[in-house]
Length: 509
Image 1 (cartoon, rainbow, N blue to C red):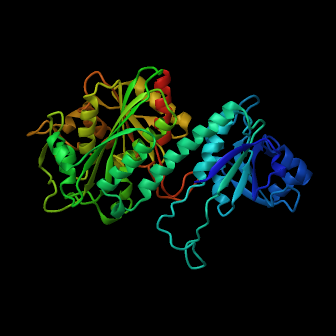
Image 2: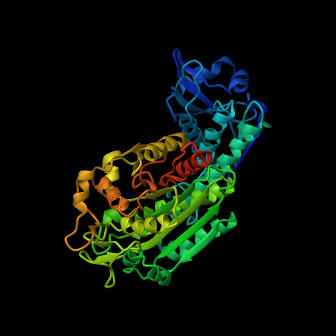
């Protein structure tokens, strides 16, 4: 993994392959961001005209390369745009810094060592710059046997060593910010790797094994429920979804006890782990299956977040329930009109086997509530309706408590993950009525993201605060890479969960 260190030496004299500075859209045109003083002095008055001549405007995430011709120790200067100059006295937005650092480091793939300034003049700025740089240095190369040539997709190694230039490298707050950034980035990378892994190598059993390995590494207790244990425990939703596959379902229970000294909040996390979603008997069109290896993005986020919480020693108790299944069509698969009985005794008529995520989540949520948590938060790549409503980058957040829901949205914003509060309209609930069971698993097409939330709410014990995150779009980037976000698995919700757990631990949420 890429390493990151702090340095107080002038960026112009850093022994690196490239140095990164920030540029902004000032009132008089292109201007330099704080931290670039030594580089500006080394290159002289010609720096801004040279960058302007190369097309630099200061627009956010814009990357411009310039040869230093020996003026600095580094042979290459990279200027990355930060957008509009902040108002006097205001700080640069954390997400702007995060994305700029990621864009610059992605552009410098193939370099071994890179120094960054980017206005990291205090600990508050160090955190997003460090996160963005580390996340921008991600590459999934497990299945690569060649680096590419003129006839193949080129592949350059991510930057190996990052140096963040700050006023005081020994500052405790800055060092703590780097440590946190490293832990969070490690969690996001884990989630990305899991989502990017082909379903042929990541059945429920393998996902459960990986979860166990990472949890044990950081001292988190693990319990894995296999098919027999799930049947004995009455988890009819998980069993039902998984029964069409040759690879049986699992549920992983992760238990992190960090509550000593915290606010005393008991938190339960639940993450959807469909390792591949064919749609089952309600088969998806072929084109809709291409990215369904990402349907375990919620499980990946929960696994990564719990391990990160343990690494950070957050003072909060977390019980995570991660249901895992492969949704396949076969002679043993559930059929439309089958009725399943869930952990809490409720029955559901399955009218669409492609709405399987809510079936496994319902069992896990019901089980999570049995322990009497103060808060339950689930995350899932749940509905195509989320994409229709909010696009590919914004998470929809629902819940039975407006304060919790809005708090999660605000925490996600602070973590740099766009989210939006969504309602659970009472009038939509009747669309889930069944003539022969307690519920059907899908309602009318209109408001599909919301009816999915209403379905899950039926399995939340009264009095438990609950929030639901739909990351169907944000979990997988089908488009080109941008900022610190690669094509493919994004690690969505990991940073949100870490931020939420920190705020729950402190009593701020």
